[in-house]
Every structure is written in structure tokens, then in C-alpha cells.
Image (cartoon, rainbow, N blue to C red; front, side, top):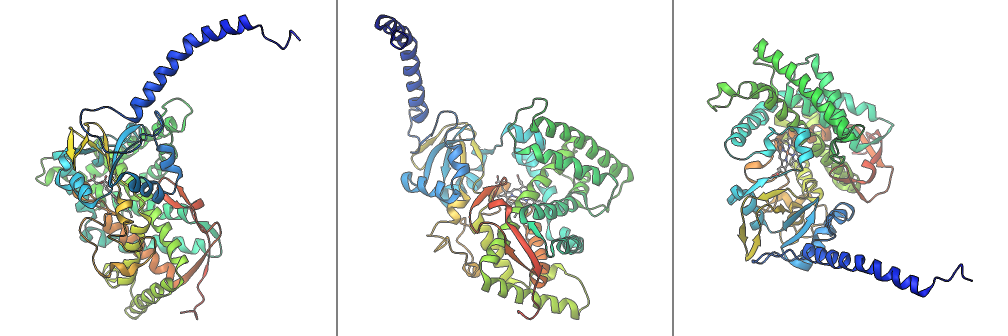
Length: 483
Ligand code: HEM
């Protein structure tokens, strides 16, 4: 009996000692949680929940369906609300006017901001992390390399990539996202390094893939961690790129094309910008990152939406077969001008960009205290314009969950359609991304059909929202009599 019954005086002593320690801890914890949930400022913060201490609402953001995460909060708190994600206090904004204020009209008050680990891995001198003169000079160079006049020359190279990729899918089950990543990566390499096949390019590709493996891991720079391995590969990539830069500087090769050529010529372009090798390397790596997963994720959604909308797939095929006949008659390959003769396919891409909204939001940081619509945004807080919420708002896009390319027969209202962002940091790669999608769709729809092999629905993050498991599909030759 004694074994199982504790003596009351002993218990009381234990409780009182433990209580002495526990009660203040609980009080402090309670105060901390209270302060966390209701941060105190003498001006009015937007409504909203800061979630769990430290973690905030990060878990919910990356596990719930992105549409419902934003809609639930928007309904509960209105078009501007606070939250805490990825370790930062944030204000999320869901109206086109507010997004315009942050990205365009008062953009100087909101600087772009990225997690420190990502900045270290891409390289601190890359365009995304900057504001002001350095940014605008760089932007001119990046834009110059991606203008239609510059990318027109790469159409046949891109078509060759498609023509060697698609036959490897025939009669096979493929992971769409992974295949699209391969494609988008090869196109990104052309866009940054040009069409020239230097021996160094293979090594650069290999190192980039090693970095990618650690890019979305926790930024823990300790031996053995994926982040540490990626940082080691990053140093080697820097060395390899600097070798290539040196070689191109010495050869004075002005015809190599791509972003590298623009960056090397920076000092001759009255921009008063003499870029060091490491600044060039950071921007080359940065643009590959910006071009690669984004385009691959959108292409994956394109295949899903076309698969789910049979009639639309047949109409797109008819449009593309018209182009194919023209190409055969004129005995030529795909040209830039062909991309301007595909209104339906272009609308399908527009609607995919809206529906999928793979960049659900972007991050900015208030550089000073800002008053907005009667609310106070403290300096240092992140401000997130929610592209996804605007793209899924029934006021601007009736029946927003319906995949309906015909809605783009009339242009959307200003500031309501921003798949490529808005303002000074908007995407310079939009024309290239569209071109890649059009060339792939042309050859895919005219020659092949695909069937989903996994679940029909569901989303995963890879790192952008994509169909579950990267959309496994079985690809077969199209029945020629079908259309
Ligand atoms: C469908 C594919 C793509 C989508 C949806 C996309 C989307 C975006 C968005 C929304 C931004 C603005 C981010 C912000 O304001 O914080 C952006 C910026 C950027 N994108 Fe894209 N992008 C795509 C493809 C590309 C491609 C193919 C390239 C280059 C070859 C590229 C290069 C860039 C660069 C360099 C920036 C930074 C611009 C700056 O900071 O001034 N993107 N992109």
C-alpha cells in the first residue's frame, strides 16, 4: 500500500515548491502570448490573428488550400489584416488599390525583402534585393536581354529543346513538374548565357542543381545540412561563372547573346555602372532562379487545366493545327510571329496564370511607419499584396473558380491582374515565359494526349503551389482522326 500512496505532507511540499516556479512561468508565458497576439502600438493595427508564438500562422499558410487560407481571413477581418508568417509580423492586403499603393504609387516606402538564407544563396547583389539607382540600372540591362527583339532569336533553339524533350515522354508516365523544370531550366540557361555552347556550361548546370536541393531547406549552415551543401555548391558555382565571365571578357565576344552579354556591356551603355564579376554572377544565378520553377509550375497547371477541359483542349488543338499547316506550307519551323496568331492559346495561358496564381503574394517591408486606410503599419513589418485573392475576387473575375479563358476577351480592370507583379519590380521575363509555354503547347497539342495517373485534385508546394505529386501523367500519341 505504501508503495502506491504518496504521503500528503511530501506532496504538499512538492506542489508548493513547484508552484513557486511554475506560476510565474505561466504568468510570463500568458503575458507573452497576450503581447504576441495583440502587439501594442499607440496607433490602430489592422485586425487579424498573429497565430502561435514564433510559428504564427505559417503552418496553416503552407498546409491549407491557399484559396481558403486567404478567403477565410478576408471574410473575417476585411481587405487588410495582420498575421505572422515565416517568423515575421505581416500585413496582408487584398484590394487592387492597396496593392497598387504598395507596389507602384508609394513603392519607395516598401522595400523588397527575402529571407536571409535565400539572399545568401542567390547572391546579395542580385536584382530582387535592391531599390533605387542600382536596381533601376540593372533592370534596364535585364529587360534589354528579355525584350521580344532579343528573345525572337532564340525561338528555334527553344523549339529544338521541345522537339528533343517530347519524344522522351511518348508512352511513358512522367512527373509533369519535374519534366517542366528540365525544360524551363534549359530555356533559362539560353536566356542568361546565350546560345553559345561553352564547355563550362555543363559544369554550371550541375552546380546549380546541387544548390537547388538545399534552396528550400532550413537555413542551417552546419556541416552535413542540405543548406551547408548548397552553400558549398554556391561557392563553386561562383568560381565557375567567374571563369566563364573572364573568358567572355577576354574574347570580347559581343555576339554570345543572353543576359551575360548585356551585363558585360553595362559600362559601355551610359549607365555609369561597372559591374564586378561577382555582381554579374549573382544576377545570372538570380535570373535562373526567377525563371525556372515559376515557368515550370505554370506549365504543369496548363496541362492539368487542359486535361480537365476537353472541349478547350480540342479548340486549342485546332488553333495550333492551323499554325502547323501554315508552317508546313511555308516549309519552316515555328517563328515569333506565329505566337501572335494564337488568341485562344494565349487566353488559356492568361487564365492559367490567374487561376493558379503560383505567386500567391509577394513580400515587401515597410521602411518607415505607414498610415493606410486608417490603419497603422509599423516600420519593419512585412506587407504582402495578395495577388491570389485579387485574382479570385468575384467582383473582378465572376465565378472565379471556373476555368474560363473567354473572360480575357475583354481586358481585366486595371490593377486586378498581376501574375507578373506590378511596378518597378514587375517581372521582366513575362514574354519569355509566354513564348516557352506557346512553343511547348504547339508541339504537345498537335502530336500528343495525356492522362492523369494520380489523384485528380489536391495541391502541394514545390515551392509554388502545384498539382499533387507534380501531376503524374501518361503521354501517348494523339489519335490523328480525332480532330
Ligand atoms: C510564368 C512564369 C513567371 C511568373 C509567374 C513570374 C512572376 C514574377 C513576379 C510576380 C515578379 C515580381 C515579384 C515582386 O514584385 O516581388 C517577378 C519578378 C522577376 N522575374 Fe519573373 N516570373 C516568371 C518568369 C520569369 C522568367 C522566365 C524570368 C527571366 C528569364 C523572370 C525574371 C524575373 C526577375 C529578374 C524578376 C525581378 C525583377 C525586379 O526585381 O525588378 N521571371 N516574376
